[in-house]
Length: 467
Image 1 (cartoon, rainbow, N blue to C red):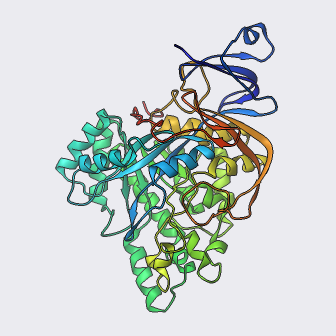
Image 2 (image 1 turned 180 degrees about the vertical axis):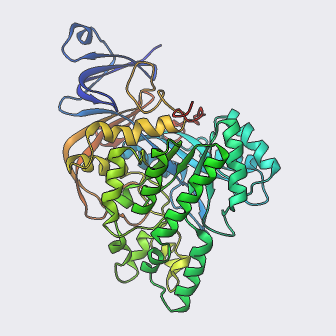
Image 3 (image 1 turned 60 degrees about the horizontal axis):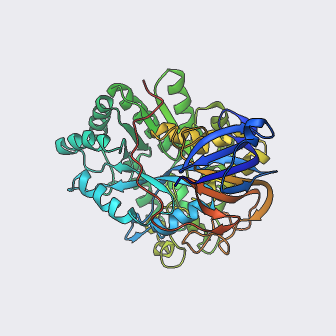
């Protein structure tokens, strides 16, 4: 038996179009669109009709950077795949791409299998994986080819965190050379971790232990330097590069310069860098620990460069880098030593709303909102047009969004498994009302109607911005 759902009367917004249209869904996919009120639309019939009059009908968000259950600093990210994907759905995101971790001395396969076991049967929405490569050797390089065949087509490396995830320039170059051959995309955490460790040691020796020093030692210039170095290594290798969580104006300038040279270099930023700043890191009574993440929050003046980069397409994607740690018992591990505060912020539930607020505030257009949050991440990581748009044949991952509803962000009301909100008390305009994942209602008029296990692993093709 086929099942049909009709979403009627809303303003359908994609990266390329805005049109008042009815959307017909059949067997989990979008079957047809027709302009509302036309004979074609009037001919649509369905068992379930959703009235979207006065609302936006948008593609489900694609968050290409999350860390559910990530081990870090002697603890684990507080969201499981179950709680994290449920919170994502509440925020209008219907696909996440999380990071499987290779530990030093272990294979990529072992890391990937571990993450499959964490996620399988637990997710409310669809998911894919990137692979964190921590140990580049001949076997690892061969495994990269095999993972691409399985739909894991992107590999993250770290210029930061010596002794944990860190790769040196030679290891980075080798992985980039391999990706130039096999079509993979290297994702880079671009910070000079070796230099940062020196500055951390010196700050602590001076008695500078508060959370705000986390931002002061992880200097913008060391993000820019690492970004420049990653770009040039990728150029030498003839490989594309995707720089994650860009936070500094100087790093945006490096990306812009490379793109002006015609290089296949892409950049992502995150809501925390657009809406928060070092003012948060400096909050008294250790409250600043809530805002410790890497790359760190920057002084407010960097925000203008990030918004400009999003408008000019020098930055293409906004992901969350969702990696939550509770204030009580987790962030507190760093009392008296900022370097022991687990790095990461909760945000998977907030991204679509914060970016809609950016539309309201005039930073970006409605279509650009959908582009940076849905369409481009789907294209960047080989999920388009199944994900990231509303078009015949696409998965029916659809959000009915009320652009006029007002809300106050708060830990009291969010669904992430963390005891604080990075945006506590922030008023925003716009709110998710109903969410469909492959045609199935996960959120129905502000009630959770999904279930763990609905979300399935989604293999990805290679980056769709490359020849």
